[in-house]
Length: 68
Image (tube, rainbow, N blue to C red; front, side, top):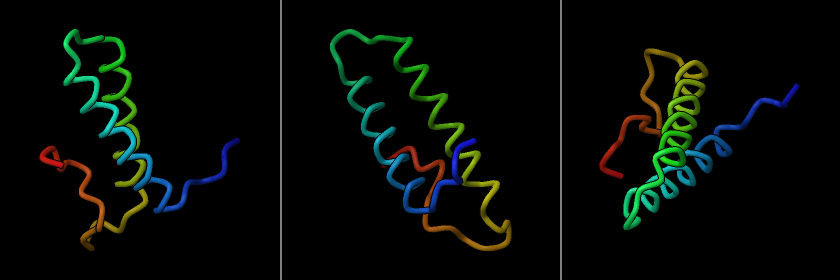
């Protein structure tokens, strides 16, 4: 089984995935399989972050910051 990720690792993974998605969406021809894979991995990562955060405290990571 994999070791749990640290908050810093989650933050890095989100940044990497957001960059990959931006690149995939700005390509002249979209590769929908790649875009679907990235968005699914983003969603899984964001869900993992949310399940590890206390619900009554704000987080430094904005999981649904689409403007980033």
